[in-house]
Length: 113
Length: 115
Image (tube, rainbow over all chains, first blue to last red):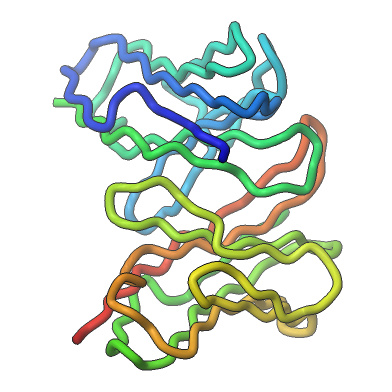
């Protein structure tokens, strides 16, 4: 079974803090994704990576950056957290260039106060 | 551009009743279509997918969906709902592009099940 894990289920940070969200997958998938999920808006793509050290902006990259130094790990970074970044963050992975479903982690509920 | 519309924000059904969740998509070519379910506090899990062939696809947990090209729809159905089906359901459409396969998700439909 594919397993995608996220470093925290719940996180509370203060405005202006630098926040790291970590995601690890164990199936050697090339593609990895970060989404944020908000009520009524569904999942919106923040960034994705199709290989180590490769990254592409998604639909809402502003205020975020990412890092992928190893194939299994994809990090989302909030350089200076703001209250409007309070949300559920979901990581996913998928084999490269295949018509395939994504495999999701359990999510991190981030609250910025 | 691809898009997905789930017209119902939430639906309430009685346990044992039938269920249909609506999904309409916009895509210029043959779409790749998915339904995912998200139980409370969990990530998304794939229920079923359509890539080609038979337009009626079977999924896990007794769900099925029918692809109707003429209506640009991919509605999810279940003949008899169980209390454990209460969750949020997401329809998604995918397409190949630069960098791989991109997936667009609908806004979701939250299902409530009453006893």
